Image 1 (cartoon, rainbow, N blue to C red):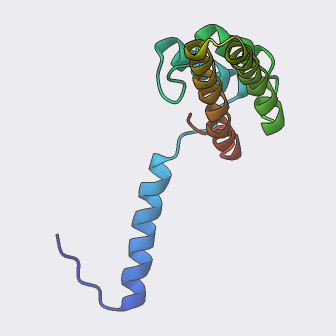
Image 2: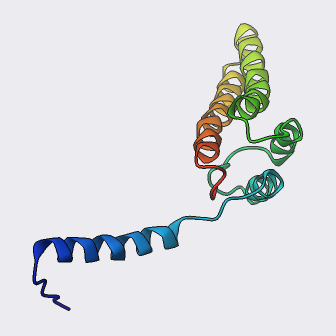
Image 3: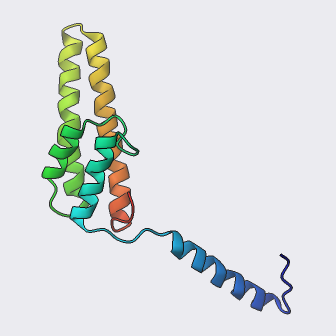
Length: 129
């Protein structure tokens, strides 16, 4: 459908109003800390993005150490788990167990890489996940 605009400013204003309505319809509502944690765990249980490859028991552990939407608290909770994998990988490397070391480094990367995604969600005031 072609819309004729009588003046440039009126057309621009109308387009902005239309786009604003479309954009606001796509923004997820804010979630409480409990809702965000429940959705995070549910996705881990289904092995769904963005928690693909994370173990549900470890996600549960990290979430049990989170009480607020504070970014540092979330980062610390996930880092404890990731650092555990790094230590296991270093020990496996020292023992010449290269396959086990690689698996542990991969798991550490997965957990560390989730932290920025969680951080992005917190920056957006826990909208979506």
